[in-house]
Length: 120
Image (cartoon, rainbow, N blue to C red; front, top):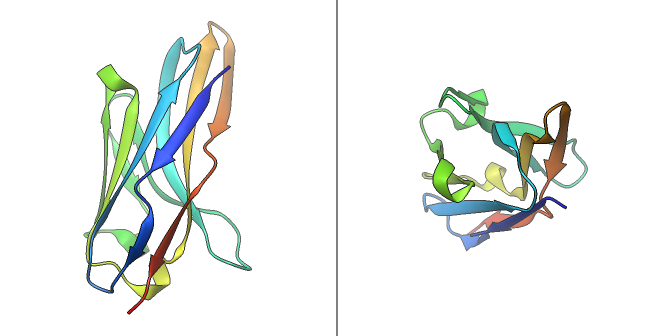
């Protein structure tokens, strides 16, 4: 059983910062990519940032220059550093992992989500 446990969400004022963490545990053979998605009320879930096993990163245009994704392979943990937060960043943030539990058994896994609210 693979588990993704997110932490670090909360309430922050505009211009503030938060750091999200997502720790993977369970039967993991290899991790191909990890990422963060977000879903605002009434809207579809969208990619915020992703990082491959080789360290290549990809960001949504709306967060470029403000958010940074990183990973600690030894800890099977991915982070999202969010700076200069705006009210429009308010959403539930979900961690995602594209991984294999064994050779040939590759799938996508999701965390439970963590609320980020940017408001004064």
